[in-house]
Length: 353
Ligand SMILES: C[S@@+](CC[C@H](N)C(=O)[O-])C[C@H]1O[C@@H](n2cnc3c(N)ncnc32)[C@H](O)[C@@H]1O
Image (cartoon, rainbow, N blue to C red; front, side, top):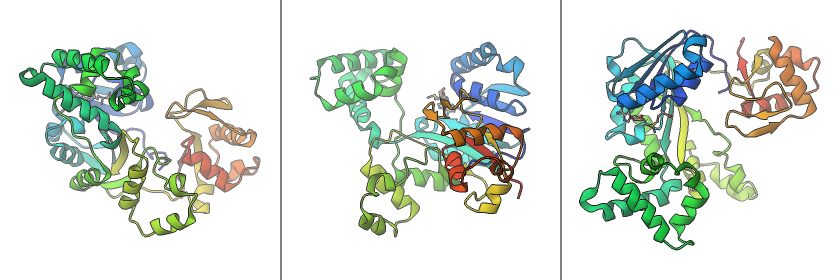
């Protein structure tokens, strides 16, 4: 993780691009890439094209972009292989997600990465209850999403204020659900499969790709939940990675989705815990931070970050194509502190070893 790709002239597939907000960002970040965006909705593709046209990325940034009406399960019909496949918010809506992920895995080039986002059941429990309640009340009107929205909105205004489903909607989702389309997507969607760690890894295994890691590694640290008890941490040492992930989500069931990377071997990896590898690497500010250069800015997750004076000096020197070793000759930072900057995804590193 955190390794700068060795080539920029890659092929990217945005599988289930929807209205193109992700496609727009992919084009912006990868101006030398050839990008193909597919979706089964003609309407969504039109909006995606218009969005990318208006944002200027098609004229200012893109090498080659193609929007195509195609089901993700039929991605095998596309010519060639892809170095990066982005599949955000789609697999959990397929009738057969395994068929979908296998089609994508087939189109991945050796060494390529598949980025996936799917729903998690624990943090969406109240949504599932509400979906089932609306379906019951709709009866033979199931499938009519306007009717579903009308029923759902009436249910929310009838339930008592301290009702668990109402409280969850207010504290977590209401901001997203003003528009009827968004409300319908959450509560009236006809096709949705939510995962837990166990079923998620069944899906991953079916892809025959290698699990590289979650995109929010902080959530998956057991220390933040049980770190106060050395005895429990010791007991947890015997757990496999998957069992540890399960334990974490059981103890912190707020999780609403899983976002992660899979790879097709052979994968280029760099072990930044090896001092020599880290010292020889060339760091750059992470392309997804916003507001750089400044001591305070937003990280890849739009969370505010404020650097210490020495961290700021280090990151400023990262614009100069020097190795970590060369930068540390002039900046008083330890290798552990450099690792912390990398783990917080504020820099990426080009490996030279
Ligand atoms: C929630 S949207 C996500 C869009 C986009 N990836 C994003 O992150 O904004 C889901 C999209 O998947 C598309 N979709 C659903 N099933 C699909 C399939 N079998 N093949 C291709 N696209 C599909 C829908 O049309 C919709 O545009």
